[in-house]
Amino acid sequence: MAVQNIKEFLDQDEKKDLLRLLTAGSVDDGKSTLIGRLLFDSKKLYEDQLQALERDSKRVGNAGEHIDYALLLDGLKAEREEGITIDVAYRYFSTNLRKFIIADTPGHEQYTRNMITGGSTANLAIILVDARTGVITQTRRHTFLVSLLGIKHIVLAVNKMDLVDFSQEVFDKIVGEYRKLTDYLGIDDVTCFPLSALGGDNVVEKSDRTPWYEGPALLDFLETVPIHTDRNMDDFRYPVQYVLRPNLDFRGFCGKIASGVIRKGDEIMALPSKKKSHVKSIVTYEGELEEAFCPQCVTITLEDEIDISRGEMIVKSDNLPEIGRHVETMLVWMDEEPMDRKKQFYLKHNTNTTRATIDQIAYKVDVNTMEQSPAEFFKLNEIGRVQITTAKTLFFDAYSKNKATGSFILIDPITNNTSAVGMIIGPTAVTDIEHEDIPELNLPKLGIAPEHYDAIEKAVKDLSRQGIAINIIK
Image 1 (spheres, one colour):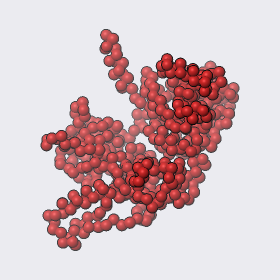
Image 2 (cartoon, one colour):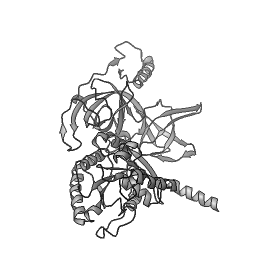
Image 3 (cartoon, rainbow, N blue to C red):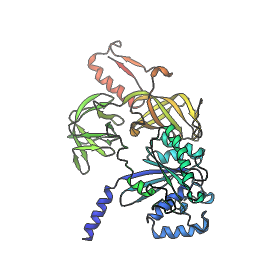
Image 4 (tube, rainbow, N blue to C red):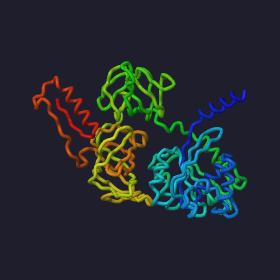
């Protein structure tokens, strides 16, 4: 009986959905304390963790006589000495309703790239403000970055309400000012909470000290906020990661479904060849499926023999992504070394890697004021709008529509460092930018017989996988 109960518990636990969230705020707004309190009050800490927390609070804590819950997150020695967060700290916990991965991100401007990293996979962002100071420059910066990352759900946590006597007037004033900012940035889903992370008010349980607040406690909200609609289930995108050929009778294309749904019998198109076929089977380790959806990892077999390789994409023939070599993007510079416009970078987009150049910088954004200004290059943590040209064709969507196919990274070819992360806005009109013409191969002019065309096309396709683009004229 006990074994069955354990099996039921594990099955139920496996079916819980996962909420990824980040916390952001100014220094001393209480991000780490809030998460520590969330873990403590929801009884998700082990006894040895509690003992270590009590011991460390007396030794290096910054909460006076209280337990310093921030020490659960601030693990680096420098963080504990300065009482600040420097790097992204991840914490995992679950309740009866949901699993959580929390990214505690640093508040300083020089750690912008750390916040971008922590928020790149988040469904929800908790923006903390100090009730005594309200909406400040850092609040605006973090909200701008969250909107840039396309995070759909925002929680405004007005912390340290105990220091303003839990005043409804103070809370309402901060909420009103913040909503002006989110309206300007086009963010619709904003929920506001009056909190005291140190005292636990409205964190896990509703507080008696805010009788005027009629909403739920923060944890209740996190357990129930709907995130299943955040994924793009309309546009089927399947970047091919590997061609599986274990024997002569099986040839499948392995990968992770980036977005959308696929079913047996669906008509598909392979990009860039644009050849069509139908799905013969959808294979997984557990067996065949009738349908699959993002973010499942599957192997797809087709009715016809089509030449598809790693880096190419399978889509539905009536729903195509943008196809091109010129993209308009928002770029976040992540490298200590400033941008070199003359350098050719590697651009990694899903399973596709190609050479890329930065053609033009439209503007640079001041993350504190959101003002735009001209720029010749970017330095560490700078953000702006740029136009990029790639050697190979990309198959992409706008980041606002599809995160999976709208994001990429630039890699320095010499150091192999991640130079930048990018969010695609859309295709760039080729006439708007300076670019080198793609060389053409006019087969009839060269006197090549038609029976050799297929062999030449195959050779050119192999070159394109190495980042060399050639147009064939037949």
